[in-house]
Length: 405
Image (cartoon, rainbow, N blue to C red; front, side, top):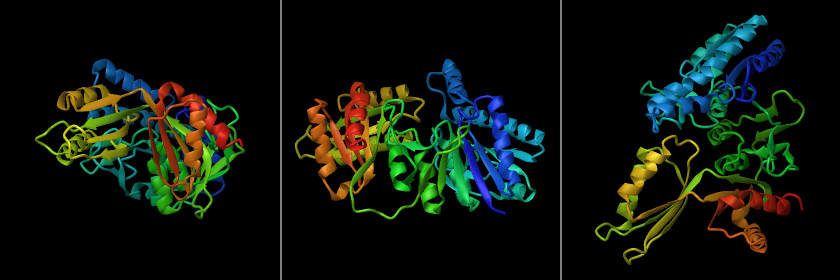
């Protein structure tokens, strides 16, 4: 019997009435003869509310205890959905991430899945039960509860689909798939009926509120197609799958990220070369689970001229004030942290083989008197650092230029 993995996000499970509707949707799939595994997020704004409660008690909650707290949100949803399913006559059982065999590293708040051992899930499916699993969570090899960061329920669903050799993975939310940009900024953004793993992964890494980037990596490795759909408005969908590479460069989406910090680190320690000082800085980032991107190193033999610039995304960092204060104390006079920037990214393919897109984008920014303070490229993405107050304007201008023309 084929296995279908479904994931329902926070807005889809916001209240018990919506859970009743989802139970009927799941029951219909089960009655078609499929084995069904359902991954759920916390209800509505539960995760944010739990974080707020923790911060009433402490400005910088301990990461381990915060993960223990946040994991409860999904447990409420999974138990309630099972109650609704059983009431419909569909046998269902709820399992936590740890009971489902989702094993992670020991990084709290933004853990990485290192293995899935779905034996309990397979046993329950063999008993003809729908298995409802709390997303966003796992258990470390040290047996501590961990959470997978924002959008981590997507990772739970795709990792389980891969481990169970599922027929497909369906991701349900309040939107009917992936768009060329944020429809809240550009109202006539275009729906994308299909997109490659690599392109949507770049969108996620660049700040787009699409699927979690780690989840796409799992899908890509296991070659599992993902169907992104609207929970209560069926019709359109975006299919995320593998495509043959193309030689023609082009822009398919414009995305943005606001919650970032730009670092400029200047080596002023004459007793320590840049490499050693830089290594110490990155050891600090590793100890505090801070991923770095858009790294630019400019070395010099002259003291005070060697510097490094990079970006850190703050979206999964719950103790940022504490970290920033400590960095400023350790590297006083050597490090500058700027929160005034945002990033706009063009997503497509073939950017590393053709400079036309970069050249034309720079010209468009100049024509519209938008200054940029950094530019980074991959084959699938061009990211531009600009002042945060110009983000939405820049998104609209570049979307009009590349997508509408």
